[in-house]
Image (tube, rainbow, N blue to C red; front, side):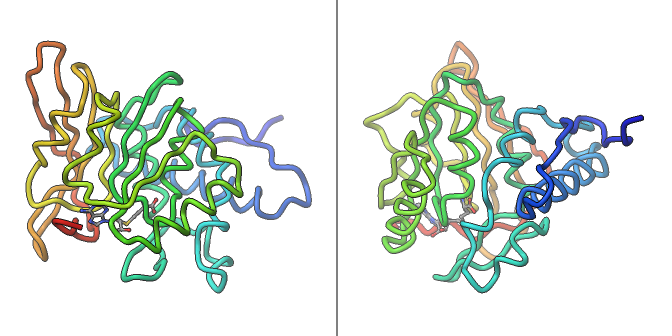
Length: 237
Ligand code: SAH
């Protein structure tokens, strides 16, 4: 008899004795449960199992400050210095899922932070480009991602508001800081048929996560997904 599993959760069998893998599996289970409770917002009760699998492989404890490793697999955000945070695993999961990531995709991320979201994407798609405004964070994330073997991620320090036109168009764009309005440059850099996940809302005001889609004919529509609380996007970063 096998144990009952949460719907949409891939069977995971962490090796006995690998404590991090076991804590990671519990985190994935917590994320899958939160998806289930919030199914009215998400319009689904389970995420793409590949997204959960990706969360189950990325060593989140390597992305948090050394003193917080014991909290690395709790389903919540944590401070990473420079007044920034590593996003809650649930949020990383639903934003990744919103992109419908495919193995051949090229994805742009705005707000590298510690590099965790980039690593999750890197396990699912061919290439990840990520921009971070804080030079120290970008450098640390670059060193960390290289050390952990995520060699399909390219980082740049700069203002994500302007995107990264040299590699456009992107199949998906994920913005991990809240913008007051939809940045036009990012919409331009999304390929027709592409998808963008972005928190929108005024500084200090209410924010919501949006899914933005560009049709094959270039028409752009947006759908509100759920209320969120992200750090603000710094203009001109
Ligand atoms: N993606 C990260 C979360 C980062 S928090 C994760 O995986 O956990 C948001 C990040 O966006 C911060 O590091 C912040 O410095 C960065 N940021 C804010 N404004 C920005 C801008 N205009 N361009 C690029 N990055 C920006």
